[in-house]
Image 1 (cartoon, rainbow, N blue to C red):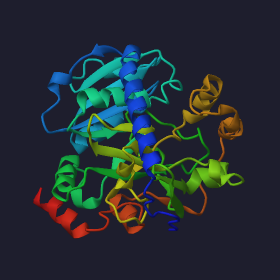
Image 2 (tube, rainbow, N blue to C red):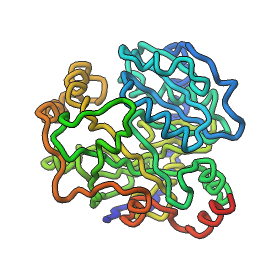
Image 3 (tube, helix red, strand yellow):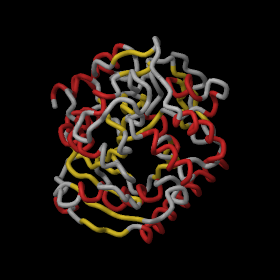
Image 4 (cartoon, rainbow, N blue to C red):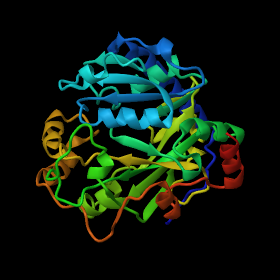
Length: 356
């Protein structure tokens, strides 16, 4: 797995000043974002002390939500803070009445909110300070190193004992063996039974100035949709799990964060930092119809005109699977492939996990 240009580059004094100012602007944007959010179900008092909190922005995810909630509840997540961005399917009805879910609604522009980041930063600052917080999309299922047996509470205790304040993850696209849209899926199903394959790489990583944020690319979407323009392929690194501080701010999704040194928490596949994997369930059968909707909404990319061909290809229901793809077998397989693991100091983290 090639790692190019991963060394930390200390920014100049001027750069550090500008990044502080940028972080202040992001926090101000998050404060103003409160005007976009209307609390419609307040169960925040039920969030268990010491439990991990999950934050998610979604729109029309009724097919994913049943398993999404089961997955994270089984992992030990204590409360879900959900921003519903004008869903018009059954997402809201599915979430209402669940005691471990609090809901905010917004009709604001996803794109104008920096793709939901302003909303998430607002909720993190309000409810997540000094708590372990997991920020994920509805199509992301976090998988932990096998030592922790899927228990996120054990993981965060081990991270704290080893003096880590967060954990990064590779976003791993899961795909079906059939053409897109051709295999049936029921909302109560486990999406990984429908999307049972992935590309093991290689993935390449580099650090970008001035934030020193990682940029990891490669995998199935690059090979199938961006082979002629790989620099435009999706960014696959994320830092979804943090012991949050209200002075921090995500910059672009959970791909990057300020203060800038927090970006060193993750150094990519086969790196030296503790890491997990986000199984990305984007390619469920509904992707075909949703691609046309999102192409018309133009809310998901800074320059949506550059991705017209991407949407057009998805609507043709291509076969993404090929001989390079592997059948998903579980966390141990991902560790053996170097896609996640305990990283440098693995024994200390592993021992802490066992003690937990």
